[in-house]
Image 1: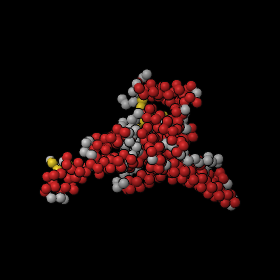
Image 2: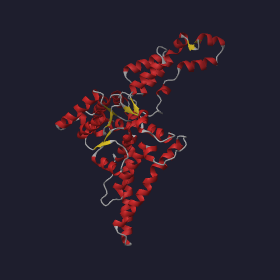
Image 3: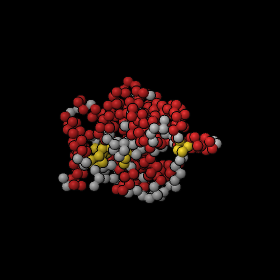
Image 4: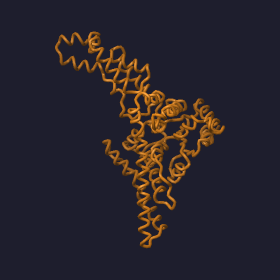
Length: 395
């Protein structure tokens, strides 16, 4: 039986870093999680969203961000989840209704990988042998004898090209967050002293090391910040869109009040409209995304089963939007609302999902058809986990 899968809120990692400022209960909860993890009873998984939210917003905050990234590494190890883009692609392109009891294996990663599949490290390391073969094929017979033996570059070729290839190795080393060992292996590959598989493996292990990734901010702030700033940018756009929609709705209410329609009637009308839009939102989005990636849209009799992660994320976003725009006492939208919806794409695939009290309340409103337990407080985790352990193992 697989371990209980835990998905923490990004704020939890910050709290662990600052546990000395918290109550003793926090230390006890952390100790509990580590003990259960080490016994193999639970696995705590992280996603790209955790990495991005742990990353620094400014150069002054790099050291604090490093502590958060180290904490993710310490608590989760290599237990990661595929990138949200890859998860959405998997859901919308799957030919049948998903089986969460079986398909979760496609979502879980045990190598620490958190970048999208499009970020193919093997493409960064060109196949030197193939390149040489193609170049030499264009030369004469004498060049082939000098530079190729059994289809592979000769020592003479490597000797002549060593300087150029060393420069190529430096380019790779300077543009990626790499350990010193990875830099050494990559440079050796470009000089003909290491295999391409070794170079790609070294890149993979290094890029997925969150501590190494964190130090990249010190080395190349602009490149590193570009990777982690997009989610925050979308969060601000979502916040601005909801704020604008709220102003427009307030103006609409005022205009309707002037012609005799009261706020209660308007809110009832908006709620009915919300339900109608909600019913079709995930279907339309899933079909649109399927077409974009070249897949045939699949039947959506039940979007909760067909595209569980996407439907959960979209439904949460819609409920947050309604709560922030068209309710009697609207709640002020926040830049963190979009990242919270982004995290929710994983909820159907894990056993315990951490969220703050507001998001937990919104998820309850969504009436999710999943068995996932939602903890609206970090200190609730032991209780939730014990409940599942008792159900599964009778302990």
